[in-house]
Length: 415
Image (cartoon, rainbow, N blue to C red; front, side):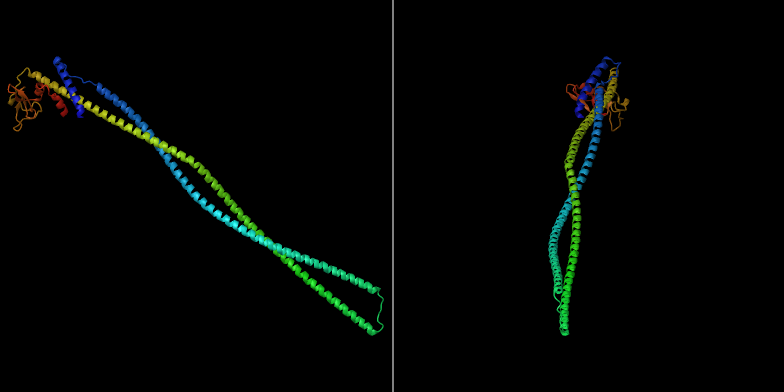
């Protein structure tokens, strides 16, 4: 403010000198008009800066809205990315656990299948051995039956031959009763022995046939039971293998889906990076706009202060011009009358209008002869051959001392 006061005071003093010259040349026209070109420039600059400020404010509002929208989208993308990563992480851990469990179950099923295959092989080998033994036994029994049949047929043939021989033999019956009885007894004994041997052979063959039938029935029962057990085991293993295969297919589908999501993850990452770069760019532009807005606002504030100062100076200039006009009018009137004022005629100071009292004495200006208070009569001018200091008022000091500033500039600053 002090730097701008010096040129204003110089310009004001020049205007006052020009005004005094104008007043001396034309005493009738005593109302000067200040130059308003600077005010117009200030107003034009202020209007232009206000327009720029409004445009920058609109750009700043649009940039803020865009930045907020991008920040909301980025926060949404970050939340979605975090949720997706958490889901991927949880899904990956679950899939790893399930794959490990499925692998363990698959290995267990493979071990069970291998054990069942070994057991089935052992049972099959045992059944084959038993079947082979049974077949051999059946073959032996069939051979025995064939042999018995052949023997039976042979015996039948022998009997037929014997019967034929007996028929062909001449009947040589004993002549005596004793010989006849002996022959009957001998034939009866042979018949009893043959019948006993026949019954023994038939009973033995019947027992062997019953045992063979029982063995065949048991072997058929064991074979059906083993086939049923093996069929049930094979069905259970097939069912477990189907479940394991479906689980593995589900795991493969989940792995494929996770792989697809992992393939899509770089695209999401790139999109997030693009949004982050856009947000950084918008933040940089927002900072630039804020800085320009602050600079324009500071310029507007400075121009407003300069405009206010200029208006204040112009108002002070008008007031001081009017005061100067009054002082010049008083000086012009004083040229036509006695300058000296008597103490009894004056009750107030001619400068500050302060009322005199015992504490505020009356003092005369040595140049114009008017009465002032001690505060308004603080200046001195050398006078006479001895250059003694003479107290003068502000107006007289300005008139007598060419190097002093105009008194109205000081009064304007004080105002």
